[in-house]
Every structure is written in C-alpha cells, then in structure tokens.
Image 1 (tube, rainbow, N blue to C red):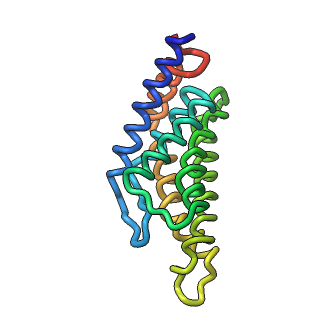
Image 2 (tube, rainbow, N blue to C red):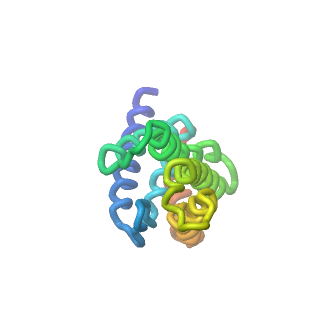
Image 3 (cartoon, rainbow, N blue to C red):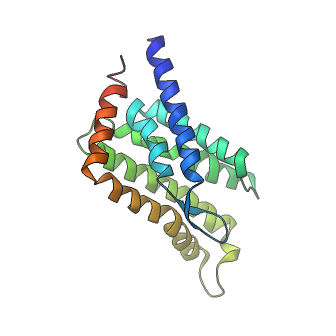
Length: 182
C-alpha cells in the first residue's frame, strides 16, 4: 500500500510540474491576466484521472498554491480562494470519472467547467470594474474567462480526440489508475 502511495505521489508531482511548465507556453496572453496555454489544464486533470479524486483534488490544490507563489495576483482573500484554491482544486474533479467509459473527456470537461465557474465568479465580483463602459460585469467576466479557459478547454478536447493521444492516455491510465497501481 505504501509503495502505491509513493508511486501516486511521484506521478502527481510530475503532472503538477508538467502543468506548471506547460503554463509557461502561452498561445495567447490576455491584457488583464489569464492566458491560453498549451494543454496545462490537461496535465493537471490527469492526476485525478490516473489516481482518483483524492489525489486529483490534492494535486489541484498544490498546483493552485504553486501558481499563487510563482506569480499570483491577489486583491482580496475571497478572490485568492476563488482563483487559486477552488479553481485549481476543481481540476481534480476529473478523478470522479476515472472508471467511466468516456471518463477522460467527461472528467476533463467537468473539471474545466468547475474551474471556469470559480474564475467567472472572481472576475464578476472582483474584476468587473474593468468591463467596458455599458457592459455588465457578469457578461464581461463570462466573455473574458470564456476566452482564456474555454478556448484552452476546446483546444484540449480536440487534441484528446486524436487517436494516438487518447490511446496513450488510456494505456497510461491502465498502469497508474487507483485500482491498477502495482
């Protein structure tokens, strides 16, 4: 049992590091923070998908705290919780779909939607003042976060549809999933 936990911990650490590395590859950097990165959310969600929800949620939390340390922007404690604690922890929700037929896709989509909701709320409450004149802050936050999180989510789902990508992830999941760690 202890050996299984060590393997999971190492795998989650590697996926967190991969997510941080991929987060540095920005396909589009938005003017008021946020960006579209090269599959960084996929790496983060794989911790949950491979190891289950407990490991995925803990990895997401660790990733959020590391992102806060590396380059976080905080204007209010609740914003910190929404943008760094809850939003990144939400990526671990993919772990609830580990043993489902379409778990890779559904788990990823659920995790990204949950992250979007956290970021949307933060944007609406704390960054709505940046909305163009006449635009409702909620609509502004929806559009802004839709571009950054939504676009990366769609790009990742397209990449996941490539047979060699999803076949590789399924093979890895067979080796690392909660019920299969040797």
